[in-house]
Image 1 (spheres, rainbow, N blue to C red):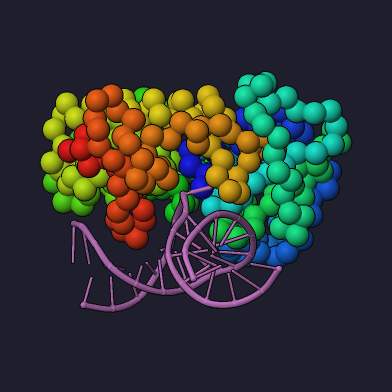
Image 2: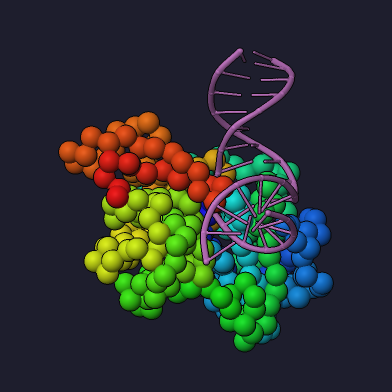
Length: 289
DNA sequence: AGGGGGACCTGTGCGC
DNA sequence: TGCGCACAGGTCCCCC
């Protein structure tokens, strides 16, 4: 489930352990995740130094001093854990509860750094994937070429969203899940943002007027920012890079709250669940129109 | 164009 | 305690 806030939380958690670190030892305990690991995966990483840790959409990018970038997508259940060396401080001390340790049988990739830390990638469902891509060619790679703007970046505004949705009859819910519209939203934060903006998830994208687009952009940004500040969300499988659990799931207004009263003041509505494009949508049918 | 369905893979939570 | 079923954060592909 990692959506943008969770991937960003992982990035921040890994940064102190990985940026500037040399990968002394790399182990791939199986030849594939969702896809086969690239040829020479272990050899190409062993001895390389991580020069920067970035995020694009839901992808983690580990730039290496050899001109390659290790690209990691967490899929639904991917998780990194740091062990060894001194403890890595949580992002917001006091904000986290103790994580449930990941099951060692799903420990697929292990990185040992020159600072004595071990970063282990766990992924029970193996929907995640990794590849090594030339850093200079990242933007042209199929995973990145068609991505929309970062929702927290300057390029994402009501004008952009209006252009992306203009004339579209597809629902705004489905269009926001499309990474070409805006990059990094997933099922949870789309539901939450639409509730905040009081927009029905079945509204055709092209029917949204500028004022509603403006509010939607603002609500997408604020829900993501709040989630990042809370250290992401944790449902069953996900934990932050340092093993701590994010807190934002306690702040969901609609996701997973079918049958509960709408949290909007004086609304009186009840949260509904419906299916759109095969995914559950949670919304209030009283105040989202 | 847009929707539906299924695929990938494993675990969890529920009703019985 | 066990069994079977529904469902899960993402992405891709085929079919109508």
